Length: 458
Image (cartoon, rainbow, N blue to C red; front, side):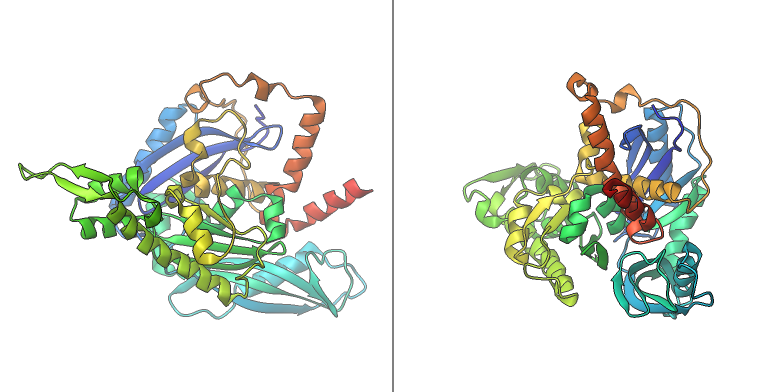
């Protein structure tokens, strides 16, 4: 176990569940989960904290379950995901004229350029959550991924600015504070999910990450290594459950169970002669529900969500065949049967399910590999990006905290443990090109990637 690395905790405050995952990188740069807890969420609607007391209760329960999985843990600060239909994004342009034109461009000047964007005018009641540089220009040179080391008179960049409602942000911070924790940073959920399910190749090929949560569907679009667009679609798995409840006249718990067990995103794939028997309430006769009717309801709502995705891709001119990486579906809603086929049919792009195993160490329990936990694992990766690029102060926890048996796979995984020297080196190189540099693509950390690539090329 690599005790030289800090323990970082991701807290995903969702509409249907709240998850807390504590992780630490091992010597191969892979995430080992050393604490995991979840709880049902009651105080959140469409990704926004509406009932602070209920949310605090759920956060505390998720934390208690996390401590129960590993009593050696001490959690004081967390990376928190943010979503909700109050999230908006805008594109801006920023430039600075340099005084010392003979000197090379430094990180300090790039930081100044980013800091200036926080003064951008946004509507009253909103607040800037993040400023993400896209591509830089130096004098007449365009599309520079990283201008450090260049010389020139004027340096500028295009920026993707993410904003949210002040009250919604305040409510999240308040719920976290009152749960006895400190918010280390707020991270847009689709960016966290993208970090968990995306590799270096995806970033290069161009990909749309569609995170189908309980209350919202989050979208992040990457093209030529740059974050091009983010959006929050105000529908998710909870809307499908409510549609089933209303359309078939059943209880919400029954609707949820039917969706998970028998649901399909394609009505044509459902058997016409299959029925689900629902017990009657208080002595009333049992209900027979057609599996095909159930699929029709689910397909109608999923079609609507995918139409929104197509609309957003058209907005940024990335519909059609431009995204070679296609669509990556993640989040709890991605587990619906036949969703890949429906997505490909509606959007005209290839689709796959994104599992958060891309950066997880081997030997973890299967529960953690579900798309449901993509955001939470991505939040830990965001924390590690901050740590590795010295963006925030971290207190090392040098106490020896092992991966508890409850979070390890039960079957023997000896073949995974015995790696040749070549495999260890290959793993290190793969990881170096992977998510370590993902967040740095958007912020100052990008330098490390290019320096390392040059070192290997020499």
